[in-house]
Image 1 (spheres, helix red, strand yellow):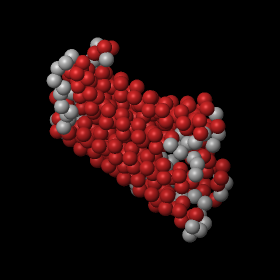
Image 2 (cartoon, rainbow, N blue to C red):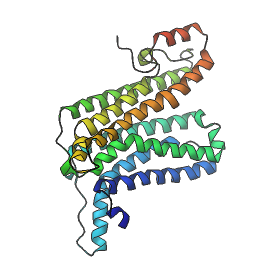
Image 3 (cartoon, one colour):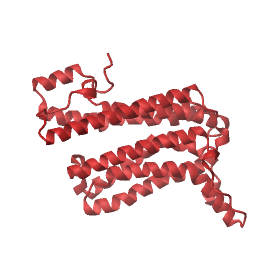
Image 4 (tube, one colour):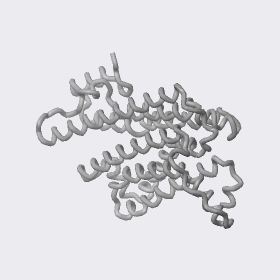
Length: 304
């Protein structure tokens, strides 16, 4: 760890955690490429989220224990939960809940369907498949950056919880519930269609009557909530403004990168564009489908 010892204290945790993300995704990519299977792609992403969140919390203690052992000094005990700042525990707990829920949902879906159509061509090309895992590692890094950065700061420099933290928590819970409800409605609709309980071609009821992509709107909303807790709540802004990186502005930027990247990814790259293209190809020109598209917002739900 000689190189790490020369870095800013927060970077000593943040950089190894980011490196760990790419290492885990590489480990998951190798057997997936060899066996040309996408079954563990989403699951590996969720496990990486869980792992990097935990590592960002405990890596400072691990480093301190390793240095003490190398110098022949008494080895410090592992920190208790009470040694962390409440903001660190809240952000880590919310991220773990989201990752566990989404990972299990997507893994169950790919097992049930037998494949994921996104990878029909990609998995047959080792280079393209490797790029997909690299992209997932980058996605994890950028989206979880506010959480990892907050966990990398000493608890003592983080300001107390304030009103904006509770606003962020409200946004996170609202987004999470929206995403879960939308996913469950679609899963139930799909199961009923397979059981021949209805003959509808596409889902346009419930939350899907308020938005064409309510699950993606919920996903973006919950990461906005995390950004508010991490940054506007005073965590990165106050902590980094006090001692690290040269000012609160960087703390703000590290906070907003997560929801901004999520929104752009879902509305410009994957998510919405791929789904819209697929459904336009299947149902374009049909009266009911065109009416649904015309009257239903593409992303943020229509509340009135």
